Image (tube, rainbow, N blue to C red):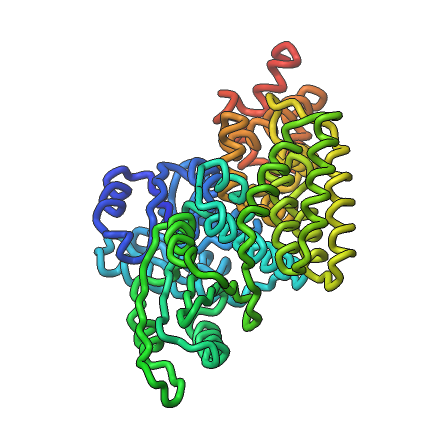
Length: 508
């Protein structure tokens, strides 16, 4: 579901638009409204909405200023501009920033809905063809598959779920805030499996490019699941019911169910496949067996937890027991699953390693074909991780500290966003990082960023004079825009930069 934000300085317009339309029926969630441009800019940094419906004229920052600043960041926010009559020049300026949706006030419900539908369509089309670096995409795809394999493993063989376990993986994928679809195809014999997966893959590339589809196969049943991306699935359902498989002795039975999030889907999925002896979690067209080693999984879970919570010499005992347990595993696929599980658990919350390090390691782990080399890799990694010093539980998580350090180092970057830091520096889910940042620092990222900029601006202004305001604006991330810097400074200090300099110089 796409996230929408509305910005307009007229309260009646904000409230009317926000309540007039059934946003969920359009596949949209309204996450907030703003009364001025600066408030809107901060909310965009914090909430990373997919769509912003904004008035052209607002105090602080105008709608065009807002579009201009966001266009310079890594955010892919789509804008719909609201304007009064006779402001065509604004429309032409908006087009420079690739804003193609421009509504004239007063506009009716139908016009807004049509614009929203167009933006939603453009969003998924653009998402499919984003110019991602090949390496980063490979890392992300590999990580998500490994994470899901471990989560499914837990659900099947441990037969238990808790908030703590979900939190172990929330830094790698979004398990709580995004809807998912799950499809069952019953009476599908194994000899037809590759043909069906081929057809489904081709359909998704044509009709939903950019959406990753995951699949499990148990005896005569294929289960597919993917992120919800449209309001109606009539066309997809019709396609699934008309799959061409030649002359089958039994007609396939197709069922699709919608889930509010990935965690509830996994709960249902694992409950249904748990009774089967062999389960295949498909990696593309390649079936990867989930082996039934229930007792070993439970034991590895217990030993990994004990190692994380213990210090020498007790930790040495648990380590030796874990080594013996791994030595007793002679199935290469299962050892990869067990190893991935341990690495992800050790790196939960980035206490010892960043998600990037974990992802790169998981890739090399999955490439191994020799079981002895695999064991050596795992033991070497575990020993290296355990040498890291124990961190004070009262301090911020390592990855939150990395966010803060990155902001301090790059404060002069006017396009700095939490989304870019999360996805390109930490390689983590931005919603998870945002929630943890808020929980650990007791403030939103935009507030932290602005506070830091004002603090540095005060230091620089104290040493300088009014003629240096433009230089200060550039050094604290306001770009070549001293007017915007002055607005932000006054909003947070109650005085202009010039007045602050005079005050610090004794009123001279």
